[in-house]
Image (tube, rainbow, N blue to C red; front, side, top):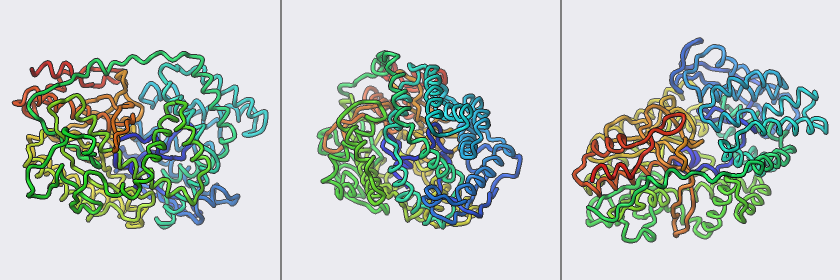
Length: 632
């Protein structure tokens, strides 16, 4: 399990190899290919309606070679993998009615990967209208098929996928496609795509295959699911695209220059209000730790030496044992590297944002020369560093502009190993629940008003971990066991939160751009009067490209390039629903500072009633100025 599976902050520095224009089904995770494969339909009979991720039929493909050998070799195994993936994806599209546009788009994307691998360019283009229709966000609609469809049209017109004639045709098609993109709508996505074109190279893809995917597949017993199969096939296709990536990046850069950047209208900042003083309000940050040395007097100090807590809150180690430190202890192992890791994180974010900075240049140089031997260590160090910064950054947002706020630290230690060996099993789930109940009791005893929770555990994550760690090799048993393990966590957290009706718990919706009703998760999926779920918008109050969505998301707040300090005091701008949720916790804290007699129901009602409806999707975005004014 990597950090991005649990924390809801920026995923910009996560290295993911996927097809040039589409991403694989987010509900799947897996490993590799084989000569003998079988699609197993564990939950739903053919023709059934799929209303939940848990009902999707599972695909198992057994590989006879490592993924790197399949992709880099010239044997029949790759074609076999493509054929088995085709069977699984076609079955889903023809025999099931998937009641979630995002998931259906992911399955259709996998079908396009198969069609590309088979050289069926007419088939690729035939899926384009449906892909466009399923895109829910304006920027996604603008970018739909820009690269992949251009490649397909060039291949059809020349009968080739390489050579001078093909390259000229590909260039012409991309120029035409980019000319039709509304840059004012899709500028961020164009910049991010150009960054990917600068980042990806054959060396990086080979290193990812050998250092990351091979070990995962071997550890799981050489079986993979649909998502991993799509990724492996996609890597092979991406390698074929690498020679054209500099050209694509240049053409995107030219298109961006053709449309002068209109200064974004910052609609978020004018609605933010400070509260200079008031009755002290205690805000808990349930995350990876808060740096009390830079929070200073804003940090809560425990008045008692009794109980499970320590000076600034309560903290748990990797096995949910009580600890005494502000920040994850694992960070100490990388203390001498942390400044350089901060530069790496900034460089990756600058790459995505299209900024030309020394950190971006250094990041590109580092990634382009990385070896398979160093890949896992690099990923591990980044995972630890992002874990290390996350809670402190969230804490700054939660208390910003509130002179009455005190921060209480609730620190959990989430897994950071790129190659996990321990599953999320019954013991882990019970440990999480026990630590959560201890934490909630601690919060009640110390009169905490609001708790920010920028983390999420999903049912698919549990199932994936059972597979990649080899803990449950059989698909039907794995699916059933994952549901039972997830229920332990769900029931335990519901009981814990319900026991504290006078505390407001604020959860981030997730950064997977998926329907939160379709993919079950905690704590975001918990439906209680004192638990609310938050999505992210940008400063123009439009849905952020990464934010998950759904009817059960209560409110939205700015989660795009939000400034905050990381341990040590350096400021970074991070994006994610991790950054949106504490904006809402911040507002709740200010409401209580302004009027301490408010109940949890009063605070939620005030934030909902004063929210404004924004964007094509009519999202309820908080309005702190109006909310605070209404309770004075």
